[in-house]
Length: 129
Image (cartoon, rainbow, N blue to C red):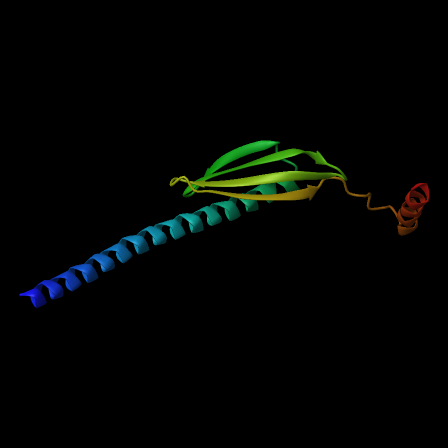
């Protein structure tokens, strides 16, 4: 009789452990899917943002719906030497938010400026320090 109880206990423990592993694996797979979906939303939104940025049609903040979620961005004021911070947010329906932040140089030197004027400005800046 005790042998039957021990075998029954071992079998039920094994079945319980396998059920727990299955539930955990399903949750991990769902989290991976949501994370991957947020990454795809971020890439699609970033591609569209760069197209708008190159054509000069961006605003300080905007958002749009994409397949599987929503993409939004914000641009902050200019940092120091002509850089602007841009924050991208990708949101899925499962409350997954993925954020990407980078800086864009907003001021470019004129194309007709020759290298001697640039090096002269740099040398002049060094002398004034």
